[in-house]
Structures are given as structure tokens and as C-alpha cells.
Image 1 (tube, rainbow, N blue to C red):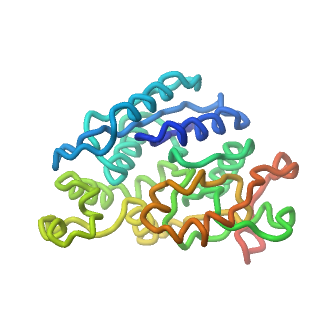
Image 2: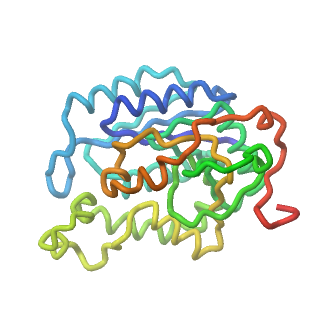
Image 3: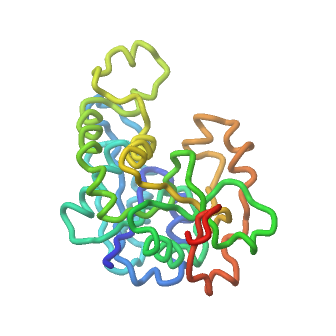
Length: 279
């Protein structure tokens, strides 16, 4: 199976460096093709500038210098925001290339050394679903739960896999969402200012980009799986989630485990969905 690993980035060089370093250190990282997608500075609809050029240039420098095998760097001319950039990644990988699957990472996470290997095993076992190996809260006696998964309730897509089979199911509806997002400034869509919202086109979905993927997965019977024991961690307090909801860090990310790999991971051959004997 031919797999592409895609990394989304924008303007956080300190976060991105940690993410790239952890991915470079992951086992078998040299067996994948790597794509780095950087969003632009100026929104093409509103003309609003969303970052300082200095920070943006630092991210560009990191993306160009990282020594991933078979690396491609795609820099957007305009600021598209996650709603459009995520769709472009899937479309580029599946419609314009011959990959069978993609692993997508955001620039605010650190992965354990076994993350890529385990994610591939998880994908091979559940190719018609999507999944991650990250969860916010640590668990007691993790060694007894390393091989167990459960369905994701939230819409988080940090470090997830998607196969072409799943993409083919959701792409038609997902394209409609993308086309509606092309008509607006996604950042302003999320703005609480009612005057801004009133100017949005009626057809624009009032949902975030990862929520729309979650809803499409539910529509087409695609499960979203996550582990009981995390092999990654969210970098920090100053990411978008924590910024929009300050209590999120203390309630969720603040309880995540610092242990990202276990000796048993190298011997793990199969995952089980919690409550199922055969997975």
C-alpha cells in the first residue's frame, strides 16, 4: 500500500519544529512519502492578513530544510484556513496522485516513536474506517489496554489515517462543503460578531472542517477510531483549541500522558475495538 504523510502548517515555527522532529524520529519514517502543506498569509476573499511575515517565513524555512525522504513542499498563495486546506490535501493525494492512503498531522502534536508503525497496522486492520493514536486523557494500567480502540465521539483528527476507500465515500459531499467555504473567509465565519455572520452565504455550513469530516463518516458508516492509550500528545496551551476555549487545556489536554511509547508496542500485531472479542 502506497502511503503519503501530510503535515499541515502555517505560522507556528516553535510548534512545527517539535512536530517535525518527532515525526523524523519515528520508526520507519523513511518508508513513507512526505508532503508539507503551508497555508498562506492573506485571505483571498476578505483580503485580511492573518500572520506576520517573519513567523510565516520561519515555518517555510523549517519545511524546506527538514530531511524527509521523497518530500514535497506545497505553499499556498492565499490563506485558505483548515476548511479548504484539508480538502486540498485529500484531493491532491487521492485525485492527483496514486496513493492508497494518507496520514495527516497538524503542527501542534508530538508523536511517539511507534506512532507511524502502529497507525499503519491500525489502518491495515480497519481500512474502511479512519483512526488516530492520540487521546487526551491518560488511563490507569496502560499496559493492559495498549491494543484496545474505541469509537471517537469528538471530531478531533490529530494524526489520523484515511484510505482511498473512505475518501471515495465522502468526496462528493465533501466537495460541496469545500465549494461553499471558497466563498467566505473561514476565520470570519467563526467570528462571534453577528454583523459578520449575517453577510455569510446561506449555503455555508456552520460547522468546522473536522466536524464535517466526522458527519460525513457517520453518514457513510465509516467509524472513527481512537486508542485507550495515547501514543502522542498535544503540544500546548497556545494552540487554536485552547485559545478558543481556555478551559479545554485544563479539562482535557492538561491530563494527557507524557509517555508516548511502550516496549509492548513493538510486538503489537492486532488492535481490538473495546467490547468486541474479534475487533
